[in-house]
Image 1 (cartoon, rainbow, N blue to C red):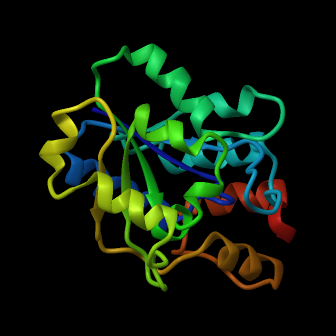
Image 2: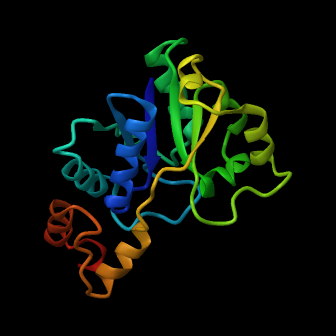
Image 3: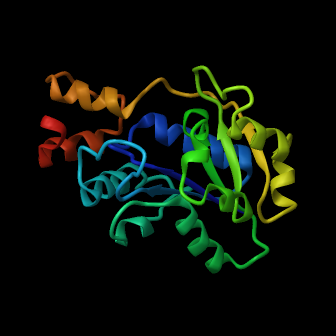
Length: 210
């Protein structure tokens, strides 16, 4: 099974990395691909460029063979659309290999506003990572989609190439990229919230107001 964990990673921090390791172990895969988006269509522009975010991500996963970088979205012009990316990955994997993408509950709550969202379950499974917050609105399109496609085991993902939704509730580190950026901008130390190699590179490049 091929697992994609996408995000802005602005910057990559221990919350992202710990979740990626949890996913690798829970899903029983040898590797999880971290996929930074180029221009996120549903949020503000990143505080660092695509090249800078990738450089930080490479440093963060350098000593972890179970985490890989997939930077395919950075070669595109314009916004990064998940359906387009999944079509490309599916073409590489073939029709039978299970393909899984990872979302937080907060992102999945707005899933029906994504471009070509109806196509996404036809290309990949979805793992929804439960996050603190209100959850899915009762009667909403994402809530109905979850009810229609929900499975209760990881094994079910291996039994089909796409189409299922699995909820996971792994332990999450309460770290946000926004909080890291704000801490750096205000002159406070973000150490131990992100890898030392990443913090050193942020200071070297003077990113986020460092």
